[in-house]
Amino acid sequence: MQVRCDCGAFQAELTNFPNHTPGRLMCYCSDCQRYLEKLGRQDLLDAFGGTEVIPVYPSEIRIIKGQEQLVCNQLSPDGLFRWSTRCCNAPVGNIRAKFPWFGILCNAYLAADPDCLERLGPVRSRIYGRDAKGAPPFHISQKIGFKDMLTVLPFLVRGGFGGKSKNSPFFKADNVSPIVPPRLL
Ligand SMILES: [Zn+2]
Ligand SMILES: [Zn+2]
Image (tube, rainbow, N blue to C red; front, side):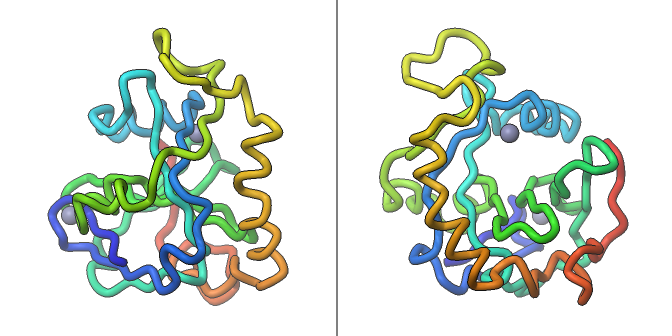
């Protein structure tokens, strides 16, 4: 499986997909909304302010081309590193140092394969409903519910023990410094 920016200048390969992913997740938190608004990509939010993310392990993504297009964004100095591209202003994914989770936004999957979401099945978890807009017709946990934890826990535990947070192409060899200096949005 590949992921790409909208224009295709940035391309990356997922080396163990879909074996290693907790599947399709929706986050309605105000930070994710604010990020896409500041980026000028509100078009990627669903009708209720949700961002769809399909995580992989940081060590299981390999950049094929366009690394020079990457922009590293943060909403606050100790916030997540939220990567986007310079070429076409596409969000790519979100990552935190030492955490076995690279949350790739669904637009990066769809740019590579418009049918890939159907193959992954339904959305498995929706979180931070307290920040959602309007009246969603489906259940969203107020914050992160017990069921939501169960959806991602096996992935996180296996990733933690397997050292999957290391050797991400988005960090330097120290595994904590982003390859591009972050900009505060
Ligand atoms: Zn692009
Ligand atoms: Zn969020």
